[in-house]
Image (cartoon, rainbow, N blue to C red):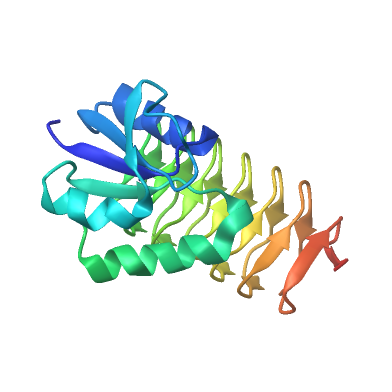
Length: 211
């Protein structure tokens, strides 16, 4: 593929995204934008400069699509940055590993990143700027709203709704029909058996609010 991808964030997440993008022949080349990285090269690819020059760089033809590679410690910033790029009318890419199984009826939003071994069942909806880590399983008719981070081996049953800016910890499980409100974090190994409404962190089996 002849397209070039810009990754915002020259860190470990950006490195992982670049590896999937290049090793799966999704893009021909990678460039990075980062406000805090001082070196000119990261992971073998050029760091062009700060986010402030993103639009000018796109207009110069330095890249074709963009992905946000900023981690889950900065969820509000990820959301605001996505909206700014959308307002710029810069196209978002999708970085999806070749091993991923996606049913033909599933819908995948802009800027989505999907790691190896993920299974996405029928009528699933992934909204914009969602990251699914290794081995995530999402059953039928589940909706994951924008800007969520889903950790390795998370299991989601059918008819679940996950709100915006949620973080689901490694090996967490959510039973069918549950709704998770916006900006909720679920700790590793947590089992969710009922709706979670109050913002904050939930852990345990069954899930309980801790802060």
